[in-house]
Image (tube, one colour):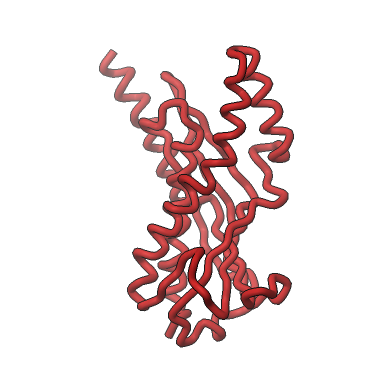
Length: 203
């Protein structure tokens, strides 16, 4: 039994390590000249046209809700509601917590409530929810992009940073989808801030 547990632990750790190594942060468009001297940055979030695994988000939610409702009446509806609410209640606060922690080194304040000339829109375009079972698991991950625009002019795109394969949890994540995914946003916030600091975006 101990050998089996040890093997499973190694497999899970390998999966997490592989996912972490796969993460990439890169500038897709524009440059950061406009951020020079900026001390406040507004953050917004969008999930438009997001894919979940191989499905559209709508198809994925309907599929999972139907499966859960068959097992227990109302369970799928509750799960579907939690899927949406987790964004505001768990993902976005954790992203901002880690992003703010690191970007504060440049003495920049960033959150959803500041009034700033520029806005950073975090657009999640892919989510892999992962899974957790007694014998195996897969970490969650997200792909998202930070779209920098003039506040009030979302079509005036100044720069885009892509965050690819930001890893979430699997170990100890139980059956809670949001618990698995939330760490993806924490990691994305941390790595995006470190990337901007490395590029001296706020010099």
